[in-house]
Image (cartoon, rainbow, N blue to C red; front, top):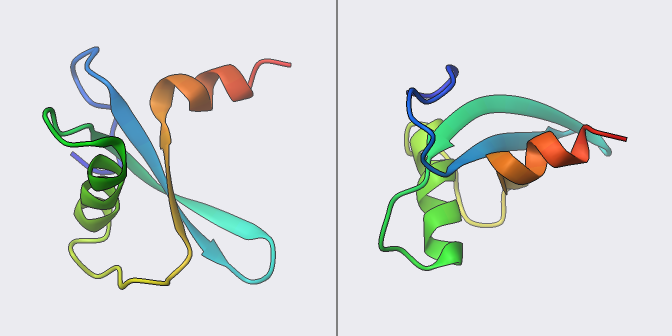
Length: 74
């Protein structure tokens, strides 16, 4: 479910949307769809997080949840 932490330890993406020049909004977490190549899995996560509203070229990012957590440890 978007906006809440997935209930399993399966890989997931944190999906963000850029607004303004250098501001990002966290849209939520989306479980990674198994069997998809990395780029397709990120696209699927962005589409799920936006309810299909994202369009090509719009500034979104899908970061693996594990990387998101590691990036916060400094």
